Image (cartoon, one colour):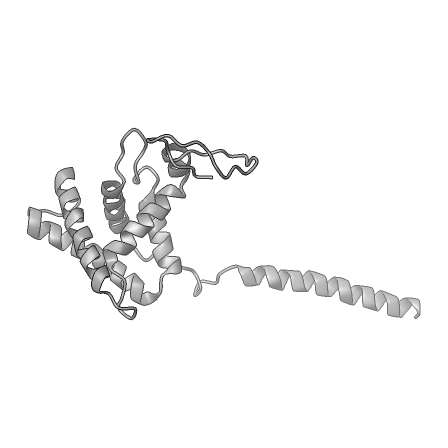
Length: 189
C-alpha cells in the first residue's frame, strides 16, 4: 500500500465517522412533525392533581399533589398509553366532573374534601363491580387507571420514596429478614 492509498482510506474513515455521527445525532432530534404534544390541558392536570390528592392526601407526609402526580399522569398517558386507553382516560376526567356536578351541584375542583372523598369512594365501588365482571377483551376502567397512576407516580417520586417510605440511598448488603414493627413504613429500596 502506498502513502496516497493510506491517506485516502484514513480520510474516508474519518469523514464517515464525522458525517455518520452527525446524521446519527440529528436523527435523534425530533422534527416539528415528530414533536410530542401533551395530551392533557393545564386544567385537566390540575384536576388530576386534586384527584390524586384525594387518593393520597397530605398527612404527616406530603400528598400526591406535592409530588406533582398530575404531571406524571399526563406524561404516562401521553407517552405510554394506546389511543383507546388515552380516550378512556380523558373521557373519564369529564365523567368525574359530570358526576360531581350531578351529585354535589358543583365541579370536582369546587367540591369540599369530604364530597371529593365520597365521590371517589363511589367510583371505587363501581370499579370493583366492573372488575368482577370484566372480560379480557373489555377496556380498562378510567378510575382504575387513575388510581394505578396515582400510586405509581407518588411512590416512585422523591417525596413518596423518601418521606412516605423508608429509603436508603446507598445500597448495602442484602438482608432477607428485617425486623418489622406494626406501624413502620414500608421500604422503598
